[in-house]
Image (cartoon, rainbow, N blue to C red):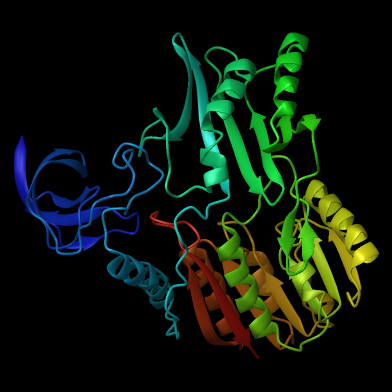
Length: 412
């Protein structure tokens, strides 16, 4: 049944929403003020005809937009898009009773996403490599992508060939591709057991000068050179398929906001430190204790610190600690010896660790988050413990998606 609705606002996921007699309806790829004919399915709908378009509507740059679920807002003009993202952060804070100075969003340019996580499945007609359709398990084959680093896009055919060799029929694999500073780091998991004959065929890709390393289920198939990423004049050593900040320009903006708030405080605790995104930069000015629960990430950080000791002068001491901060958060007594704390947990946030920080006497705290809701929740805990929120910097690391990164500074 076709209905006509007017879009009132954008939801948190980037879909337009309209109030109807049956309740709120979410309509992807629409903008506030638009009138559209739609067909509904539950509380979601698709546009059958756009009757009146918003003045903020622009032509999406990608032919896959609307099918691929990687982007939600390519059809929205940049100023309105950035204002909406800023409001996501501000609204999340307000819902927790927090009034804050939210800075304008730091915009990230197209082609800056250096890390992509593709899905791959082998069908009767070959391998499909791409991103999931929105709200579905179907994989949309990708031929181009204006979000991704051109170095990844240029090797899409090779990535499909690798998946064709490594993925067993009916297996659904995940391929993480990182455009490191010295070549692509490709990691595939979930494709099924790799046989000796497949290993030989995969090893043939080592002649491609664009590929630094290929790994299957965490084990290197070949390493032409160790992938490296610059970090404030030092290097980070990414792990196969491991987490890194998705865009270099976003990482630099995040690091600048972190360092600006930490200032001259010393020493510094870097909690959920990963491979050392902030640790390496902070160690330029203060001793750092870097804590993370993942042994592989801590090992990579230690290796990078060993390299830095050989070629970088003036680096302050760094102590690395493997510790699951979700199960065993650092206590107020342990934290009190630091001049500043930086914590950058996964999207679920760090409620338990935030509670311990709130009980500490540490003068400065920086919270980094890709989830405004958990940032606001953890920030509320800090405020209730006597901290004051001084500034929030949103960073559009995930271009044209509904996600937004933010760095929040607190003082006691």
